[in-house]
Length: 286
Ligand code: GUN
Image (cartoon, rainbow, N blue to C red; front, side, top):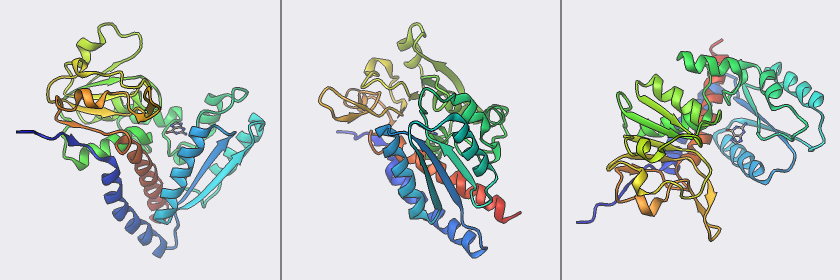
């Protein structure tokens, strides 16, 4: 008997959650509140342009007001900070993000710190990060939050599970660890300096991989019947889109796995728009 692998299909989950979110936006509009999301994009990084286009498409599909502020790569730090200050005080904007990376002449930390935590739908400001680790987040980083929304959809209970995260970025690894810890998982974060990585990952009930290296995780890194979340968006030797996990090598060995594309990616945007709608609901309810 051939047992087919259980896919964690973020694309399908996102489409299903879109229905509920569209209704929430309608309710808000009936109360005279339209959720507003702004994205600041600096320069012409092609990956960023694609991410921003996808965010715009999904936001507009749900009825959210989307504002793109696109600066030339020569914009000064002062001009950028002034725009952030303007958005912090714009009552029509519930949340905004500055798409990263920003050019080298701009201090990324300074930019993030200038964002009001109340509108920080990326969850990147030091105050947002502190609240997340305390366990009382106002906003949550979208990729991490999207992973949790997907696991909830598939009724995966994290309580007491052994979770191993490969990658310690502020955007994915660390916030995913915090959210899973808040769900009573036992969490280990591994990274490029970790010794005996394979020994650690092969004990994981849930393995989250976010390292940006095509097909790095093979079958011998993965415990039998583990749940594998692949955050990678890489190109293989033939230029084909793939993840950080070698899907074909591990697929018959795991209980659930995210495909790339169509896994974590669409959930990231779902989590972002969900957050904007939630902040707008807070505004509507005064
Ligand atoms: N660049 C890559 N991922 C992200 C993200 O989640 N938010 C922002 N602002 N920039 C990114």
